[in-house]
Image (cartoon, rainbow, N blue to C red; front, side):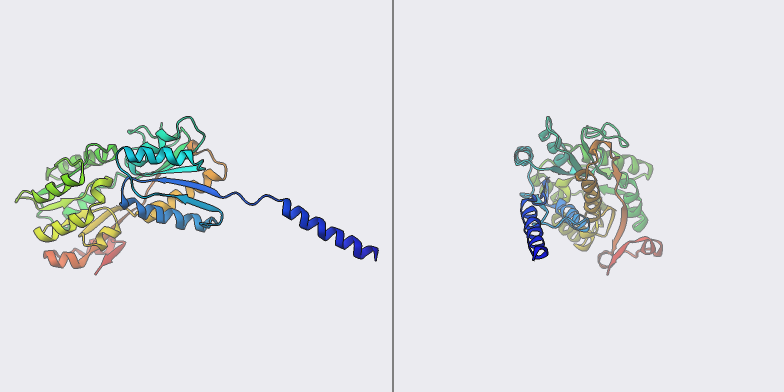
Length: 319
């Protein structure tokens, strides 16, 4: 009898202690993005975090209200900080800079990606020790190699059309690399400045007749208009070079650069380290991995025979 009473009391005590135990904290991640092209990064983040045991709707919540531009980007970052997020993700250089400004004076860490020049735009003190409670993934040095692959596929190219956005620090960094690479390869670069979607429309409508190829620069404004670039490349029978698989799947001839979903999974690993207690500013900024993608169907439409060396080097070929 005494044993039964003891077991009953022990059971009631266990139940009572369980009831008093606080529920596991839900991690809240705010995301700032300047263009829909960054949503593949977000998908990668969610995939990566799930692999670390963070299930959306269970122990992690993402706040993302769609891409924002101009002053709306800064307003969105400030609004996320006001919602007591545990960490802010800044995508592309404009999103990262907005996140940096919004968290000033707080203890909220920032993880950013993909950024061309984090030190140059003021996001990091150095690549090895970025400081400021921020870290992330950079990607820019692929631009010269991307241009080399384009020329390797189409050796007769002499003039390349490359609209770019001078208002985006990351785009300027990548553009400068492109200019240097074009000079070394003895290519003529035509580089109209674009500041808005309307400028992109005008730029694509006014491609000079001597242009041999189109090169998509590495800023969110350009990359978010892939459909317009592909339509123009098909209409004018011009090879189009860009930076990741989804754009090759949509019809670009080639891509060389970071795969955004994979970048997102890199970001997830950094997020997991930070929310587990690591100081973001002490985590080195990482390099994205780069991949070559080819569209053989588009090559046939353009009358281009892709060399075997390129086919062997490609991570994936669209046939």
